[in-house]
Image (cartoon, rainbow, N blue to C red):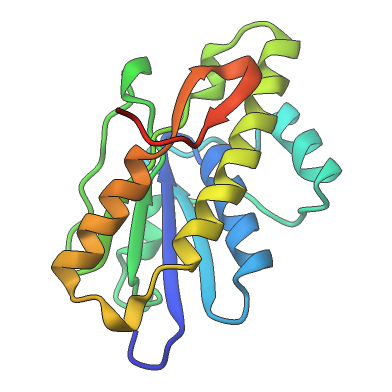
Length: 177
């Protein structure tokens, strides 16, 4: 973190949609200060087909599922932040990342829980839009002026600032009461 450039890993269950979206968004809008990566706890062999369509419409390409252990190896890039995007309501476990990166939990619904194609596409598009807004807010944090405890608290607040009251209408970025 000393040079003002940050490495960020996004984790999800299969690394076939949510974390791929987050990696793509951060690498596009944060490329001058951030490098985004994504990985799965149990990665899929390929991206979700509907996620590919959503990515194509948003002009994101060239992504593939990866296993989290690629980022735990000695030659892996040092991580400054690790965000989990798991859906605990769908029974997805929240992983705990070893080491010293600052961590946060950003919960997004598991797209696999929607069997209807239209419903799933709507949820995926809402997830992409929510991640774009959440990552923009993350990038605005005053990293250099916050100590680690304050930064962790701000990330916790940012993670609680999103909810999916109705997946069809997208994420609600308003603060929860």
